[in-house]
Length: 297
Image: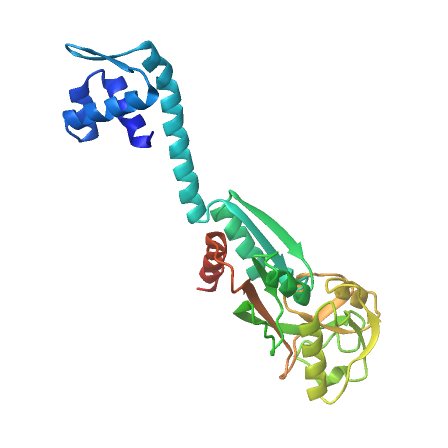
């Protein structure tokens, strides 16, 4: 039994006339009559009484009618579901991000735009370090992740879509001698300071970038206090435990005890990228990429 048999049956049942049903379906009346006979043969009983002015449902036809209608409705729902899935309008997106990337406006705006554009997609968010995110992407446990890649980042199974670099700023306790200077400061001004830094494992690329630019300025940062995570660096600077270098987006955390100052030349850069598995083909992921590209225009 094919769906077309059910459609033909429904047309005759609703029109009560083979000729009108054939016109509605856009086929000849003889082929329609043959299709109905084929259906009745498969069902094993007559579904219509042929009468002089049309066709009437038999008792079997009356019982068959609601089931045929339900089957066609289910088929249409199945078709619509397939179309929506192909367009990425339903499904699931597992999206990761690093602690520092989550402060970048591009990340939050992309998530907001995706949720607005595709509200029926289940969105699963996960925050962890870049290396852990890349490992999960490699195992296809995540569909995409906003990460802080290093300049030499190379994962054969991962595609990195570079996003705009982000400037980094000097974070100083409010009573620090340099805190009142409004002009950009050279990085070398921090050569004798104790730093508040997150462990290298928390933000490998950012940590290495800070060490690199300090080395270019002629010193190695002296870590006086480690912060458990990126976002807590600012709190510890505000508590007077040292100075630090943070991304410009983290500088949106405004605390009474901390002051942010730009660098004069040679400022460290925080890279940002959207990482996706090379092997993954997903309409839902394509829609996320569309959101990100639109934000970059």
